[in-house]
Amino acid sequence: FGPIKSLDIPMDYKEGRHKGFGFVEYEDADDASEAIFNMDGADLMGRTIRVSMAQMNQLNKLSNATSQQAIWSSDEWFQQHVAGQPTPEEQERLNAQSQDQQNLKD
Image (tube, rainbow, N blue to C red):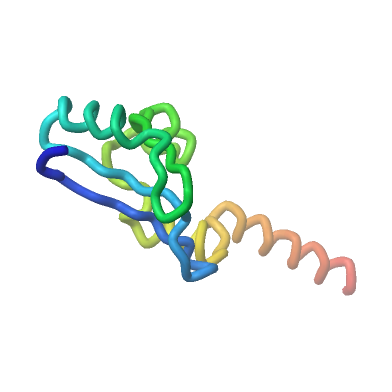
C-alpha cells in the first residue's frame, strides 16, 4: 500500500508469544487509509483480521504518561507489568504490612 515508516508487534513476555495484534505506521496517511480499506475483514492464514486506525485514547489507557514515548521503552514499565515486580508504592505498603505482622508477633 506504500512505504512503511514503522512496524511493532507486541510480545507477551510471560507466554513467550506475540499478543495477536500489531501496529503499522505508513509514511503517507493515504496509504494507511488504503490499507485499512483493503485489509479490514480480509482472510489471513485462515483467520479474519481487523484493521483500524489506532486511537490515542486507547493508548492513554495503557499508560498514565502524557509523553509520546512508548510505555514499554522503560525498564520500569517492563518490571512492573511483565516481571511482576511491585511499584515503589506497593513495595512500601508490603514493607509496612510485614512490619505490622512482626510487631503483632512480638
